[in-house]
Length: 120
Image 1 (cartoon, rainbow, N blue to C red):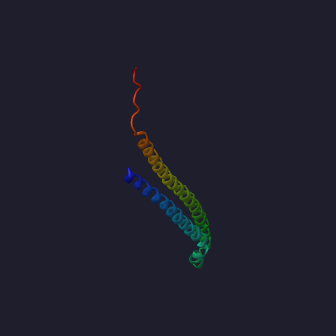
Image 2: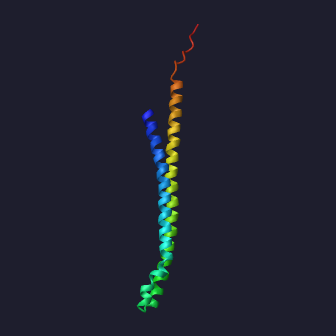
């Protein structure tokens, strides 16, 4: 029982760490996507220098909106996934605590069995 409790505790702690790591990685990814979308004006200079200003406007505008949308979706999915992993870790911690309490209850009830009343 002690090994099972230790394993559940380890899984819960790993779940908390993973939830935090997913959240941080998702935030970094989202910042990268959004900042990349914001810098598209500077990267369209090559098209403008070639005289393709109209093509630059057709490509950069929708691409910027697509990157901002992708950043928003990535942020929402990161929050959702991180929350689910955190909830899983929390449930593992609750299961561990409950198994310890059930074991203690079973140990206290395993005392001597009550004797039936004897007829006179």
